[in-house]
Amino acid sequence: MTKSPAMPQSKKSSKTIWTRLLILALLVMAWTGFTRLLQSILNWSWLIDLEITPGPLYLAIYGALQGCLALISAVGLWSGKSWAYPFSRAAVILLFLMYWLERILFTRSTSGWTNLPFSIAASLVLLAFALVELSRKP
Image 1 (cartoon, rainbow, N blue to C red):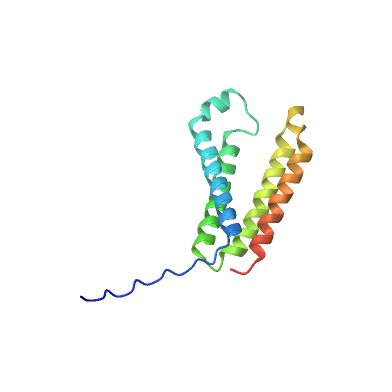
Image 2: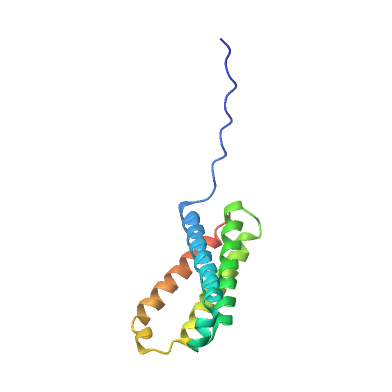
């Protein structure tokens, strides 16, 4: 009876559970961004008829930008590219700023401000988590 050669052991991933969680969060952000883009395109005339401010073009551009930044970050982090950590840090900060600029500039209803303390705290905690995780050496 012959012995079969030993199966090569797979290289253990250097990604921590926290890095994987960040990648998952980025993929969710990419999905929501691309969904926003798609829905803006599909409902373009309806959004124009409703006179939505700032309009469907803004919604589509924002969705595309959010989707691309988050997807590129997630794929770069997952594949271990050298540029992924600095790119993702910049992308996370930009996405954070985009969220708050949109919220400040375009929230018209007073009910949109009712959970402001929670929104501020939650977004700062998530930003801090992402930046701490992205400051680690891969």
